[in-house]
Amino acid sequence: MKINKTDFEQMKAKYDQEVKKGKAAKGKKRDIVDQTNWIFFDRKTLEEILANPKADGIKFYFTEYTEEVAKEYYPENPDEYVGRLNLVMTASSDSGKNDILNEMEDPTYYNKAQICPPYCQ
Image (cartoon, rainbow, N blue to C red; front, side, top):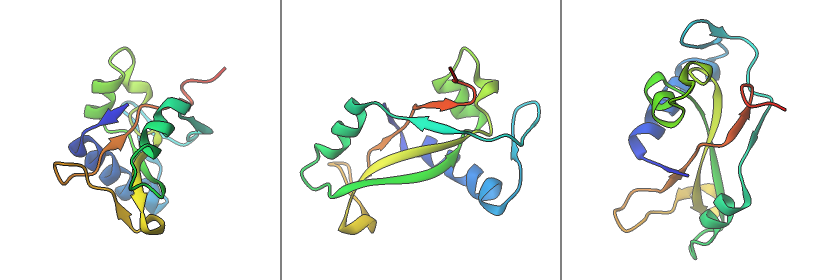
């Protein structure tokens, strides 16, 4: 699923301020001390990213769900996602140095994977 640049930037900033610095992530009601075990993206999403003829690969960004983004993408249970580690992907070239720009000169970002927790079998 594609996400907008604003949501990506919010999630990346939250990650940079908390988890990247070795701090516990801040959830809606509690600190997240037991982070994500795995993140799943379906084949369709991965193939859509790699379908870009300029793509040499996929760049994965570590991010963290903000309250606003969690409410937008998981309205049924956003509190379970706030503060959770996540990956956002974009097509990349030059061995990951450059994000591929679309016709609007902004990279296309992909998100909304299944993460565990809260989605665990």
